[in-house]
Image (cartoon, rainbow, N blue to C red; front, side, top):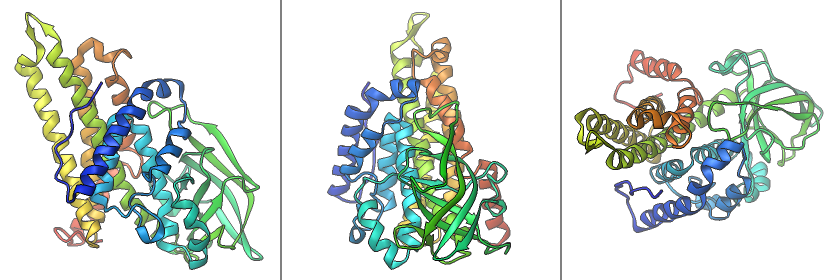
Amino acid sequence: MSFPPVRRSLPTPEAEGLITMVAEFADDQLAPRAATAEATEEFPRKILAHMGQLGLLTLPFPESLGGGGQGYQIYLQVLEEISMRWASIALSVSVNCLAHQPVVAFGSDAMKSELLPTLMSGTALGAYCLSEVHAGSDPSAIRTSAKRDGNGWVINGTKAWVTHGGAADFYIVFARTSDDPSHGISCFYVPAGTPGLTVGKRESKMGLTSSPTTLIHFDNAHIDDTGLTGLIGEPGDGLRIALSALDAGRLGIAATATGLAQAALNYSLRYAMDREAFGSQIIDYQGVSFMLADMDAQIQSAREMYLAAARLKDSGQPYSREASISKLIATDTVMRVTTDAVQVLGGAGYTRDHPVERYMREAKVMQIFEGTNQIQRMVIARHLVNGNLGKGSR
């Protein structure tokens, strides 16, 4: 099923060409495979490798480092186009960029020199290990530890909810290096295959089932500070690194959620125009047409919010509050829109003959990961209390 293009205001012909290329690629390579891969829980590594060759896995990083040199306004719209066809793939692109960000922003010159040629080539898939079973929304409570051992570190503990677990080429790991409540967490680059790193059972999930999510165990996993592995930034910088990356990651999830919501609207609109009841197309009934209109209005609002946040990021301004608002609005929107899409299709929407039931299942987790929407409300409220309303300030 082809999707009508989203009306976009793009700054350059190059950006227009990129969006067109991504949409055509996604129609040809992603949309036909999504339903089967989700049903069989197949992780499409070959497709991601192809996307890496096209430069789609490193779009927002500077050209001087080997990235695509695209601002977040463009990168997020690429994510949205991908998510309209297959949300798990958009999630992979977003998480991969999240995992690359600490090396790009905080890695030593030696680490960048050693790692960036591979990371920016699009051949390396990353994973982000922050959450633990008892420390999801509160990263300051993590218990995974890293202790000095000669010229390196020994890591012990378990990370939870790791996207790309078992499939990643490297893991960004946050571990406790001291008892300091503010500066006791540090960040590490750990290659897959490191002795002592093992992958737990793949989670059996409600949605996004082609994307692997696992526990990652560290049992005396030793890494050396060589440039190819080791500490990112300084000891105690971990929370600052984690939170800076999460702001960008929340925008990625907002764009992914918006794309999924758009897919649900597209499908339910087409169905409403084709389906007849009582002698008329069901879209002719106000109960259905108003529902579709509300879905469209909510999606447009979510899109404009994440683009407003992206403009702040691209201009170098603080955008933490706007990232939380974007994630909150877009993921609440996708939950409402996909639920309404099932309602538009009626009984048919509850069956797996149509994709909207899958869209609804995929939408739910977007209100949970990258910080639950309750956490986003706490972040937004903190900005209000601190007098930062309207400043986009941390």
